[in-house]
Image (cartoon, rainbow, N blue to C red):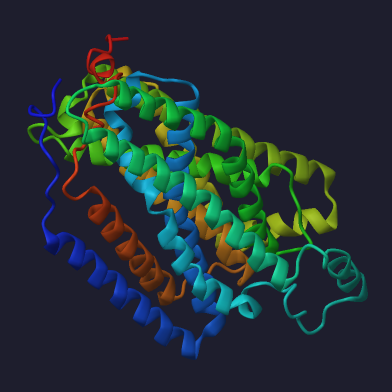
Length: 401
């Protein structure tokens, strides 16, 4: 498969500018809403930030895992993962509102009124880790690692496309990508784990779980795989990567999606079961906040929608082999991912009483608009597959399985 057979992606500027405009208006509306309801707007923005960042981080983890495993078959679908991973530096800018609203988000920044002596003692014990300077310093480290690895893997891949043929230089670029990914993968996982503890679990700092970070990470991978499934079904034009994917590619993509849906459910249920059996007040309160009132309906919806429905659909071979049916499952899972992140964040503000503030929607549209615009701009003008990767021919001939 030569570069002349493939076509470059030339998305219209209107798409990128339209997404950026929607994002700007959404962020402006969230800012105005924050004037009247700062805590609601801060939590709504954190929900949107965590959701969209999880898609890019999930793509970065999958991309690094593919390179580390020296996988050949996913070469044809690697470019959208590279684009999503390369957008990580944008989230360093989008993290600024989170940094500016720390007192409205985290009780360890400014202890709430009426905090008991025992709880105050526990927070003081965690102060060496949960303090603003160290918190912000860790965030800088996270974005430096994610941004460096994501951008390098993307730039090297694009540089490889410029080679006149699959030359020795093109092979060296692939080897460089594999070495970087294999060396950086443990660090990427650690950064995601600690970021989930910092930005999500510390919303309720008196509660802790050793499975929490793994659950969040599995959810991020589910979201990224679901995004690739949706994009592959829409990028079916001549020479686009979706048109180059056959039933075997979609079958393997769907099998990966099924595996991580099951892993997410296993981690989430294990955490719930162990906490509930132990029945310790400082642990059960986290679930009480998310099972009382209307939050119980959200929890049931997640159990059914994030696991039950996709699990039984993805067991069907014909669903996984067809681009459209897999895209429908992917779109559904993206919706469930938003509900899951919402369930993790918002009960910290409204424990035991399900509530929705309109700034959640505006923040979601704002962060999402800028994220989609960044993806389009990064993809614009480039090939939709790594055309000079030495393993692309193997990927295009992947056997039906």
